[in-house]
Image (tube, one colour):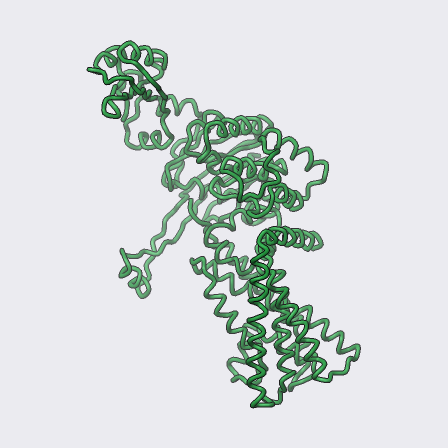
Length: 263
Length: 341
């Protein structure tokens, strides 16, 4: 375990060094991340100007959910962006070299990219998080701080696990494009808003089948003690473990049918 | 125990069976048909410690697929495989510690990192100690002559440099078993010679080597055993000299001429059994001969006594020719047999 973490850091560090070869990319991607997330906030603000409450959620509550999305996305992009390279790695045969190195293939794939634009997400998400908590007028008890720390640590793992799971479709779909997993990523965007506004089917999908809501909505309810069942947010670690297990399972199944490329 | 043991290894790929063109592709959407093709169809192989095996065959014969099965990259459809006693696709990480792999077409180096950084990452993955790493690296740097490229990123290397850096990466942990898939493809003669000398040394040190190649020179220089595979099956497994002497005897000497000769008949009569053909509109000629019947010196003398030679080169048969001839049944088995063409 310690060896794996150390090697993971080594690989990411190497990617960081490689990425710094392209400094321009870093700035462009960071600006893009800020713009994308920022536009969402503008959209929210526009809505809440006319409708002050949605299903009992006020503007700053929703901003908190939003900030959690930016934070978890930021961490997932920064630390495990390699999941999105699977369509290319698997279908153009790049996995071959990964499989003959003595380090977990899945961890090698995950650490094979470092998304510096994650820093943009983290900066924005962090500021929104602080601002939202201030406006929500939350009192900071030790229990609340512990809750926030726990859910913040586990929420990114939910996203990473789901990224692995959906990107493992690369083993079944023979294209080097990530269209299919990206469709699920877009579905996950629904979890930027309080999921109580959706119908039951969407709610079940987002909280049980592909629990994207555990990267933002449920953690936010736990931190703010809002909604009908804020304790659900404390299940974030369980959801994270479940998503990671699913991701690893899919990857292993995928390796069994990996066909490499060319001859 | 043999280092590499494969028993009745099969790998079947399923390919969509599409008609031609867009219509065929659309039709496949509703009428899904597949054909199964066995890329490797019942291969059994034993390779001992210190053995150097050339694994050859025409394009699409299943060479790379075999290597991918032996390295654990692919999971076999059926059959057994053990490398150093380990089933590679079940215990990939343990297996990876015992093997070194180079795919000629693809680098295992990190594309945007200096070669040295790639090697250090591999050092850490293999858990090599500082002293062991230093010793191995120094040896590889010297033997492969890569001291000056360690600080270049992989993307800036020429093909020959990249191949040598890749070999260093594959052999850094001093693995007992090494697989090389087309290691000399696209390299110039000088680099090839250097690589072959290096490989001979590696084999002499007791490493088991399995080499797929199209280049007869690789095989002659490095390997003592030749396995020929075609359509997923082994068609020959045995000594190398015997095959070359039986199936790949013919050499072709090409000579560029100063002036157009009136006739080539004179050369032909001096060299019994050889075929003389005109090339480049009469300004060059080719003599196909059997080295057991005539030495290259004899052939050159015969040509020079008739015409003025400007330049010449000798072409050795490619392994594809050998395999093609084995199948076509045009095997020249004695000095009197007509040269195959």
